[in-house]
Amino acid sequence: MVISKTVFQHYLQCPKNTWLKIHKPELKEEFVFSEFDLHLMEQGNEVESYARYLFPKGIEVSSVGEHAVEDTLRLMAERTPVLFQATFIAEDFIVRNDMLKWNPETSLWDLYEVKGTNSLKLDQKERDHVTDVAFQVSVMRRAHVPLGKCYLVHLNKEYIRAGELDTEALFTVDDVTDAVEGRIPEIEPKMAAAMEYLNRESEPSGGCDCVYATRRNHCSTFQYSNAHIPEYSVHDISRIHKTKLENLVEQKIYAIDDVDPEFHKLSEKQTSQVRAHQLQKSVIDTNAIKNELSELKFPLYFFDYEAYAPAIPAFNGYGPYKFIPFQFSIHILREPDGKLEHVEFLHTEFSDPSEAVAQKLQEVYSGGSVIVWHETFEKTFINENIAKRLPHHAGFFKEFNSAMFDLEKIFLAQHYIHHGFRGRTSIKKVLPVIAPEFSYADLNIHEGGQASNEWWRMVGPTSLPEERKEIAKNLKEYCGLDTEAMYVIWKHLMEL
Image (cartoon, rainbow, N blue to C red; front, side):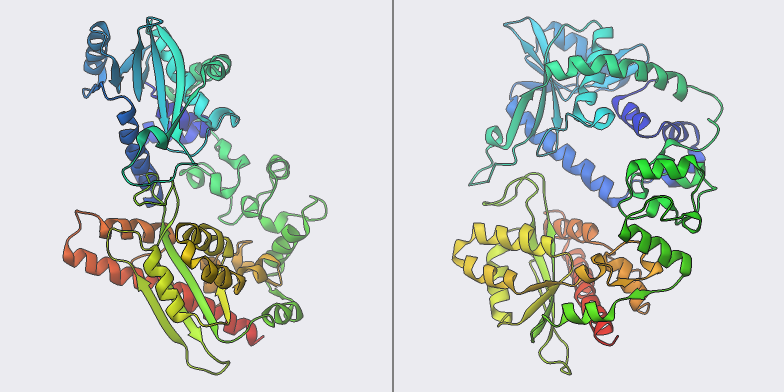
């Protein structure tokens, strides 16, 4: 088999998962990309396409395999100034470069790798950007390519769009030649190991290396390779340090029921999570909860934004990955025994919603407490950025932010612990425990990332009128449930 940069990246993350992906097609359902993964790939492709504007004389190698290698060598011989997707195969490794540029001053080819990030990752060992470039350089040297400098092209986090997109200012180009040279001796033995491992005919025995990683870092075939580990395990202990997790795994302690918090020196919060599961009961500090909720002043506004963060800023005043607040929902309770009201806003055009959001909020809000979940998002990522773009509304957003109360902090502070939360405090973990009759499963949109992608699709040029209508309906149902959920949780806490 031929190993690409992507396959090598996957191998570094989890060798067995990569072997299964290649040799076990019957497990294909385990390898289906999530909507989040697909979105990241789309964003990455978009960033690369814009980065090509930095190289106006570039020619793309559109063929594949050996034909791509032949076309690459022909274009290089013709001294084509810049090649996109130049392809090389050597010793059963294959690479396709984002950009390969001829340098007439050195008579060498300079390599450019594009990354859809705001900053470089130079110190994360196997999973950083330098390793990606080092892999390419290693293969290209085996193919006898006369290489010069190596560069990483990434988004400039300081860039703010003003008028037409300025691709020169949008991107930063960093020379990483020395870092790449230092990395090559580290990765070449791993490349050889990957070639041997991934060419095995029989399935590698035992579990996979992800057993030493927390749940969010598990591979897609973790359960297949580690069937002996329960669905809820030590990997789910909140903020567990890598060393503590490794110690538990080395002792073959996987079930939370088998963890001794004192012996394993867990933190106070981790101990509470473990004990709640072991005892299968809630731990509720009613006085602390009442004290927190006593800060609230009527009317209460249960508030939530939905926002989209494109890599390439779409509108003036935005930088890379800055959130576009396209929707909000507010459930309003004007007095303790009052009737719950609902106000919603959804921007349905391809334009900056900021002014419309600001005006609508000022129509609705007239003092009182604004209840949110995870306030950093609403306060910092949305409101403070709107205030920067629209300084004439800065006073309102300062007042609005000062009125915010983060309902999640009651659960973060562990004033309310339930084994069903599994150490998590997201609203989608808390709501089903407190009010199981409410469910996101019945909706067509189930989480925020999906909501933002659907909005972007709705306002895009290819969506049809009926499709836009359906997406708008789904978005309103989803965002509305978020704020209704906050009201339901608040009411439950008040009745303790």
